[in-house]
Length: 405
Image (cartoon, rainbow, N blue to C red; front, side, top):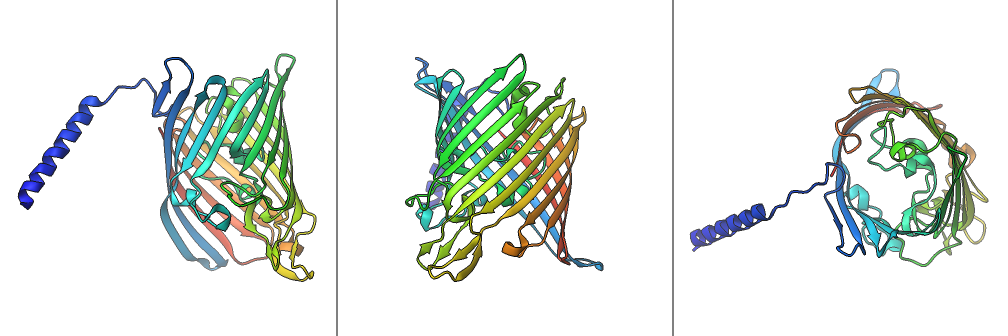
């Protein structure tokens, strides 16, 4: 009986594979442009589907003194795995984007504030071009914060973003954004963005605590737009024939924030529930590209009305808001064989009186091979983290393969 069932199972598998083989279709979609792209016969909607993943190796060594390297550790992991859907609904002026995360790193962070559910949804947003150069965004997506955060994790110049981003970024949130751009003369481009969001990050299902988060950003492009939106792409893969520059300023107010890093970090818990304080964050950043050379710089500053978390009677809980400042600058050159060498310097200066943290300086050297631009690439970087007045410094090596379909 087992032998007969095995034969039947193999026969069924053969029929399934044969039918799949005969049913396969040849698509005109090029590598990296999405797995599937469809438009309704009456042009009332469209959808493009894509997928990507990153396979990463990390090796770390702690340096305790001048005698050598100790306490090493290493790991392989799927850093990111994403599914992306975008297109238009009813009218080409009403666009949508959905992005879902699948890896453990993507979906971690479940809590009572997210109904103890995995954080699958990254983006779920409608973009309505309702009048001339005005766009209204509604849903969950990235806020108009620091440039490095808005750049897709698949379009980075290094294996991952800098320490400045991990300490100060304002990431994604649920709300509405109004965006506009204007051109002055033949080339000068100005973009304005205003956002109102819940202020507690993505996938929150609980009621809003405290107030809301307000974000405004201005961008100035004196030499006109970059090729293929290159002001939000790491490296000069398009080899700009003329110098291109983008300068930007962002101000973010999280009114009565309840998390340690504006809408990021941990909730500020006290004896009556959640501690509230206004948190202000400022970003100044720039991107420059010309003939394979690229430079990006960022400055961040975060302050709070009262960074010390207190109970109802005024006693301290021991938790604080992560206030301070940081700078990040990186330079790269892309050779004609699509190899790139890049360097990065990051300095984080959290307020030591509040956080107890020393100044951190990180130096990074990166080497990348772009096989098919950012859609298929191999990247590696070597970083040295120097913690001022500390014997606990760190060396880190990373190697990553990035694939986008």
